[in-house]
Length: 273
Image (cartoon, rainbow, N blue to C red; front, side, top):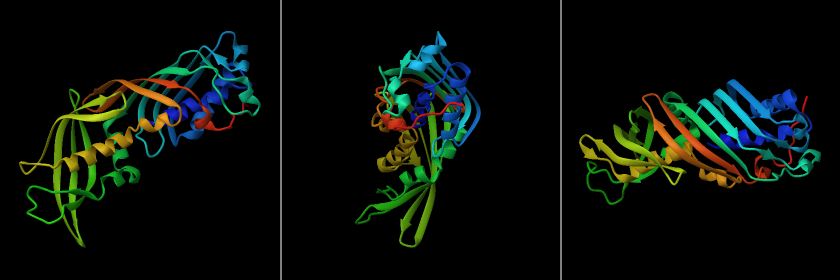
């Protein structure tokens, strides 16, 4: 979700031009921040066009497919539409970037299951699944809890709004390792518009319930993939209004409010062709 900060940072492309040139400048700024983009369209609508020279526009429209920026999941579909926006014109002469009024936008994101799994297995996310301390019910009596790693995590999207999480649970005991396959099913929902929560989880290994420490580590990795709280440090408020889980994709509809762009782009300004 941090990719939204990059998307909103392209508003610096408004200064110094209008119409097609402004569209292309904003599009190029966004492309420069992405590792890959299959389709990307950007339109800055303003009537009359010269209002763009004052940093004003009626709306910003972004439509993309196959957008990727490591370590986040590839975005299959992105649709973003803002309300009227206004950037302080002094920002185009080198002053710090400022909004004359908060920016609000509606956003729709679709992520495929295979892309979500690729993100879960990235080094940045796999670190969330290491060195888990827990007592397994079938592990025998020990003075201290064992330490485990979750490897090869995988999520399968089930209909309606349920997921199956699976991984290889590896116990670390000195140089010795013992592994066992684990899988758990649960409903998934958004709590407070920002974090993921599992509902009615069924976590078992060989008919034995998996300890909460294991399930919490898995959920922590998912929340790292969809980390929304970090955006608030950038002056971005993002609330998930709808989360729909299908058989092979996840759709998120949300609301974005941006108080400032200073943390997104610093003093950098986009140069128009």
